[in-house]
Image (cartoon, rainbow, N blue to C red):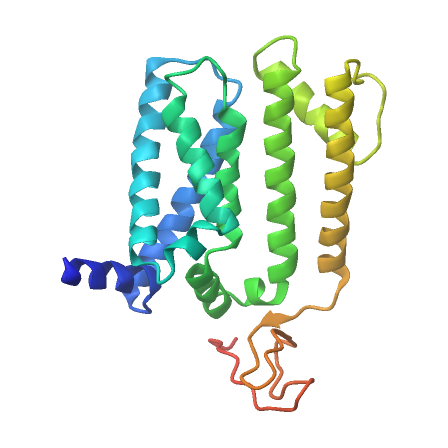
Length: 255
């Protein structure tokens, strides 16, 4: 058992080619599942859809249990936002056959993991110069996209008067026009619940937009903690820390 645990730790946190391939494979799996969860929201329930959901739940559960098993502090691990999001996704998949309440919109929260896996972020910073120089903007964009589609799916499931892909597009249109405060007027909230949802979309959405704008227009920085003062953002070609002057060794493949 100890040998198995050591092997799992190496695959999830190590720097071997196999470990890097596993982490990149997991990020591709996460991307594929998020896209699937977005696409499947307007689709009617069917045995085939439930079979796919069950298979995805098994893979996510195995990944979740492995990460929990090798964690140094399991309670702290459970308190991380992306771990809580995984729990919500798992519960929505496992409870779906038991209840009539549709929880599809919660599954898109799986996307929260994409920008918060520590060792994967290290791989991306080392292997991709574009990611190193635009990390903040990419993560902010990802958060905004997740918010838009979680909200769109919730609007579709709780407020749309009809089903199907056309109603889902209407829900996306309503979400974006509300989030941007454009408010064309052809789709407007009528009930108290719809109006409260619109308020939440506008308040949270504007905050995410401002964060994205700040990340885009702020000069590019790379993530590399200074060994002396702990400053984590530096110019891509920095040799010394601007805060304390200590020597930096920013990991890069050049180019």
